[in-house]
Length: 79
Image 1 (cartoon, helix red, strand yellow):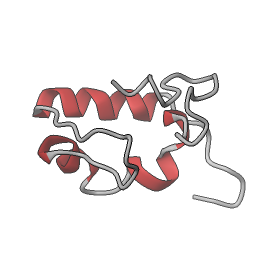
Image 2: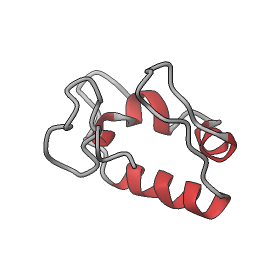
Image 3: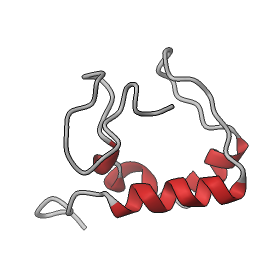
Image 4: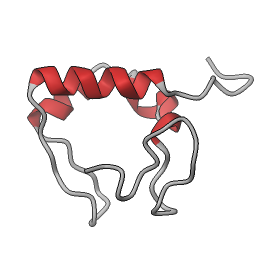
């Protein structure tokens, strides 16, 4: 679902140049305390071509753990 626009691996460009690679999400999304809950309740974006999607708890945890596993190291000067 996500790979049609986002790069979902440790390398490579996103097919849609406006869609950030998943490996760059740690600073803004993954450590947000309610991200897991939003994946389960129905994650949507203000971007008009991004669909709303829902995960069951098990799949939301798996998706979040995968996204955390591919993150780029923090940029210097940021925690």
